[in-house]
Amino acid sequence: MNVITNTPKLLLIGIGDVTIRLAHLLAVGDQPVDLVMAGRSLERATRFANLTKLAASNLGHFCDVEALELDLTDIDRTAAEIRRIQPDLIFMGASIQAARAIMDVSPQDFKKLDQAQLGPWLPMHLALNYELMQAVRLAESRAIVVNAAYPDAVGPALATVGLAPHIGIGNIANVVPGITWAAAQELDAHVSEIDINLVCHHYFSHHVHRFGEARGIPYALAVFRDGEEVAVDHEAVFARLAANLRRQGGKDGQQVTATSAARTVWALLGSETRRLHSPAPGGMIGGYPLHVSRERIDLALPKGLSAAEAQDVNRRAQRLDGIESISPDGTIVFAPEQMSVLNDLLGYDCGTLHVTDAREAATELRMKYELYVERLGAPQFA
Image (cartoon, rainbow, N blue to C red; front, side, top):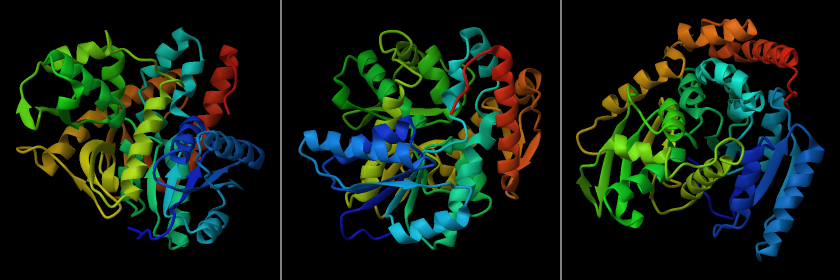
């Protein structure tokens, strides 16, 4: 990874909710940074770059924030901008369609769409990441790349063509705070006494905080109190996430995702090794406990759980998210049960997809989703 000697320069791509929240957190953090906020619209990028800069000034932080118009489909220009900026870290927060976009239809229609899980929507998140990583390689950049767009699947898909981002954010990291608090309550302990060691896929993190149970979902969890592993009823812990520890989801819930991103970014910029949870380290499937610094991203698995066993947990869980397999040759096989939902509702059917065809698949899926939304009479999404 890159050696950072001066004030770190961060390129934040995609002026969406998570990136905007993350920019504010970084601008007022203890680690001084220079930010470049890049998006398709220069006007939008400018307004949010200035908002970030001026809001931070209120708290006595004077952060340089540049706005940049960037179209990731233009790989040559993206590479040229990366060479010009020379970022130490690139945060990828752009998708063709945000995962939460389907929440804006009626509750009844959302319930139907939600049965597809996230896997069949992979092209929406993979296409732009594939284009970005081609630009990173073309620019010969040594920047650390952090991906926020369905990293559990995008990372391993891009790993098959040698283009995986270094690490992801969110997902597993979004559920760790809740499980930690719930375990503390079950053990009648203060939350500061509790650490957890979790291996899980996006499907687990998405399901458990909403429904308060994990029956039939592969995962691995160890709970520690003052450094010693302790026994605790997992289902009792999970039940609290939908009871007294229930939280707001959707757009408001992105605050948890943004704080997980900030924690990961700060760890990647620092010399001190920090322990945290993140998805897709080095392009691995799903999420893991890690030791992270600017020099390292290493697994921090509990005793008795090998890296192969941890990966198998997430490989089995990804099937519940609608992805049957990701082959070493770059072919993604989607689970028929989940894909059939999009076929029935949208008329979109993609049994297999190669990484290099992600843009074509995303274009078709986006078009068919927009037609579906028009039929419903629901608003369109940017």
